[in-house]
Image (tube, rainbow, N blue to C red; front, side, top):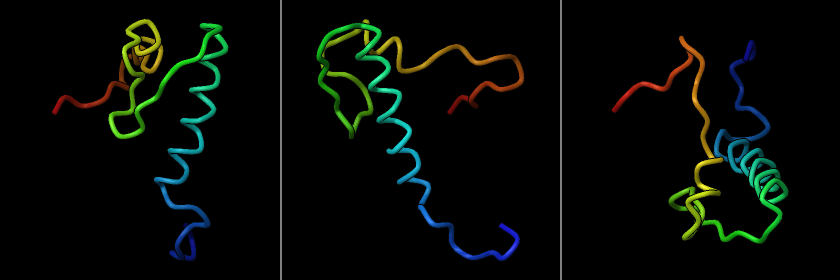
Length: 66
């Protein structure tokens, strides 16, 4: 940040890396195999699993509405 050089990993790489960890946690919690659509970033035909992808945000940390 101080040097203004590019970071070692792009933002997209960081996002995909941590997403994988979260997906593993969801499959472990549900104790079953799941199918993931990386383009839509949601599970295929599994509403229960999709509910675990997001969580309510604390006041002051909500995402803006678009």
